[in-house]
Amino acid sequence: MQRFNLYQEEYHPSPLINIWLEFRRSHIALAGFVLLVVFLVITLLAPLIAPFDPYLQNTNAILLPPAWEPNGTVAHLLGTDSLGRDIFSRLVYGCRTTFGSSLLIVAISVFIGVGLGALAGVLSGLRSSVVNHLLDSIMSIPTLLIAIVMVAILGTGLGNAMMAITLALIPQFVHQTRTFVRNELQKDYVLLDRLDGASSVRIFIHSILPGMVELIVVQATIALSIAIIDISALGFLNLAAQDPLIELGLSLSQGLEVAYVAPWLIILPGLCIFLMVLSVNVVGEGLRSALRTRLHH
Image (cartoon, rainbow, N blue to C red; front, side, top):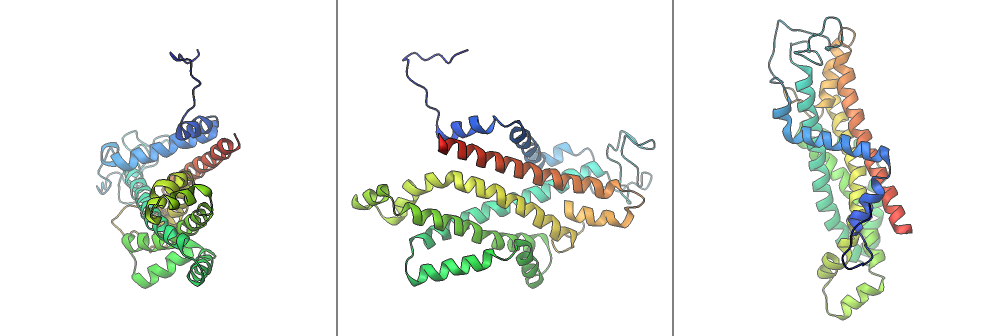
């Protein structure tokens, strides 16, 4: 059915709606988006979703297999661990910690990185060259290695791990923002704003920043994937979240102790990490494809 238009005007969707229309053409990207929304809902509503207290120990239900196994029970859908704690509830809270902390890491990295990148973009001469070479040097080092070094200096703990990963991700946003700002400053519309008496801050906020939203969103999805892997890896190495805090990487590490008896204790947390990273990467690729298609049109 055609869209009814009283004034017979041609319909032109906004840039965001146009991106969404292109994004949903890919069924794989749309499935990844739905899965990402599921993890977001779990992060926000974990206490309402978990059927049991994740810290509650039950000595009468130790190492119960998942419900589909012969000895499993529907009461504990995904089984229990070596202390009788419900695995499903612990996975829900583990997803909340891993995904929630990764979102916070990316949000802080975007805020600081875009601000520093905008400042670096307006610099020139020797200062610009120093900043550029420094960023290139930092970005050549894997973020996980930077995070491990910083955690070794700051000490173990989820807060220190989040701080380390944030500091490792900031240079990526600084580099992307700096490159974008320097390119935009050469364009005519910026020159017109300067002739009108607009300051550099006003030009960035009102003229350059709106055009950066798409770039920031795509870069944020890449950073979110990196943050999830890094926070899980540090948790697995016992450098991030510490017991009794529940985190997927830490749960995976704890499951290794009884892996031969209860393999689901390492399969299920690993599967959650895999699906989390997969959904973020699929959505990021879908966004990049939608942006390329919109720009070509």
